[in-house]
Image (cartoon, rainbow, N blue to C red; front, side, top):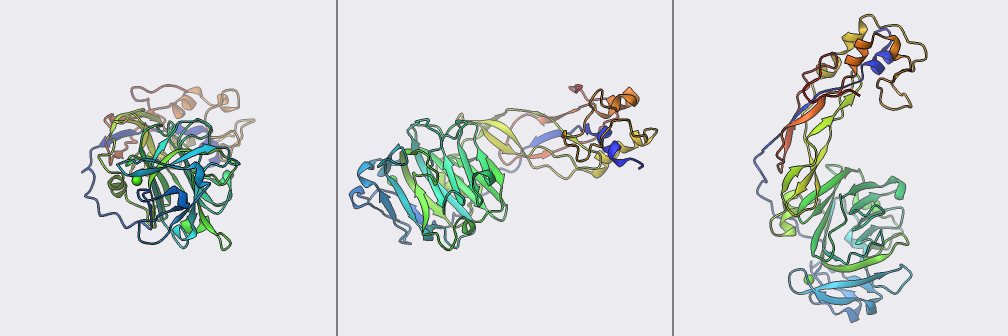
Length: 395
Ligand SMILES: [Ca+2]
């Protein structure tokens, strides 16, 4: 075509996609979870010894720092849990230092703990910190700067974090099982709450990259690598696995029946793309769950037939090869995704063509019932140059 840049700009349209969430066969029978490399149950511990017993058999005992301010309290399921007082990082609040072998030479990782956060909303209390320092770490906080549950991993400081964020804080004053998997095969980090995935993010970081040759500890329970407040609450059944547990294994470790989705927060999506570029279909949809904590439900989309987003090219190849004055090609346009901008040159083109090219059509869930293990089908059967589907609206 004569002016591919123009074409890309003008034909950027909202591709319709019909999203169908379909019931799949459900959760497969769980293969037994691998043995953890570190388990702190606190049941047999005496905080005056300043040592936390690893019951995994691997001897990865923890060091209880500022032990005088720690206490043993009732555990999540009988026995004891470790209560930490919180407070300023410069205070004498207790925390646990983890032995280096917990993460040294590991690739995949799962961290799981039962957590009873006291609900003090000073942000960025880290439940645990795995890694070297404030450049290389993996952590979870019940309450970030936006008041939300947050897990993040980085090897280049805070600006390079892969972040997994919940829709609310970790529920406080109740035992909750928080599990994080670092899956280097899937290249994802995922946070689970009580055995059900909250959200995930892409990352290529491995456990081994969280430390280097000069690192002497695997990090902490109850303390951040930054000067953040100490964790205020109780911890029980703290586990590290040298593997990324499957969703079924995470649910098994959490115990009980995981919360289930009860409704979708959104059942329609606007999908916009440039001609010739596969549309970025939403990877997940916010859903309500039976425990009252919203989570992301991932959507698995099949590949989109390239013809579906290439067809509209013909519309503007006919009679619109002249570059409008003042127009800047949409590809690489610093103003963001190409779309019609009145008064910036597109108006010189026949209005009907432009309007049709940019008519938005909403993607819909044909089945609004959320399902665990959901897959989605899309239907891109309505080019931008044709009338919008029911529910469509103009920009
Ligand atoms: Ca316990």
